[in-house]
Image (tube, rainbow, N blue to C red; front, side, top):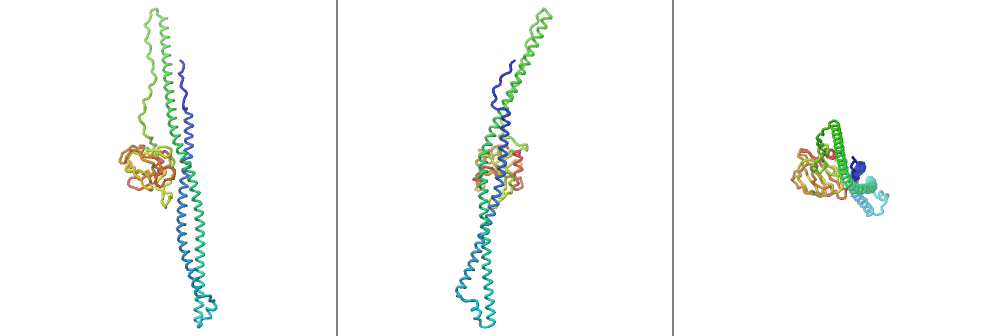
Length: 381
């Protein structure tokens, strides 16, 4: 029996493997770029903090310089008012030897005071010059870091979108390859069943012919063996959750290609320290509940932009901020882990940075902890 002709495959397993490797290479590039961006952000915060200190010190030194300059000016005015009196004339005008000694002491004190004022003025001016030079160097360094971060942000914005497209295509290609593999398995099973049926028929026919040779009496023709039906197609799978949990049982807070590093406690602008982990992804990527729980609050602020407070059934509170928007799941709703509750953005003081979710974890009965290990477990990283 001729084998059935299969239609040409739209996607082969090799193509799926190549697409997966391409996706992994791009993910590594994204991870490396995010690590560089996070490091640059910390350097920028330290540089700007040092610049603020230099500016404050310069302001204080300028005030000192102004006071010293006034003292120099006052001394010059005093000398001018006295007229062009020489030191010799001042001394010989003494009425007595004691007066002569007193005048000499006054001259020495005035000379020392003048020298002290001029020395203080010189020291202050030198310190101002050094600070101004340091500040100029730091400003140049700041611009260099900002340029570096701008290039990194452009790469992330472009390639996270590309990674998201590749992820969608890869999932579709894998589903198509799996469907084709299942189709081949079913066709192979059907072919095997047909071959077994033909073999049984040949065997029955041979037995019938042998019985006819041994006896002149015709034997009733045996009824044909029932045909073997091909294996039934599997029942369609039930609706899948919006994402699968990791091995830890947690769901990644970002349902899509994501990159992040441990920046908990790193310096931030205004002398702040980072209290969360920045999870970078393409703008609009769904944000998911990390576990079963309740959306306790969702609102906005100048610093955080759009944000969500989510409380897990274990009492741990999770904080998502800088969101682009919310889903239609309102506050007060109990949801299953993996449910989409928002979308990745860069609102609040994150405006101008690559889209990301600032994610925090606060276990029941304690304050904020480093959320990076939790995020890694949830995202399988």
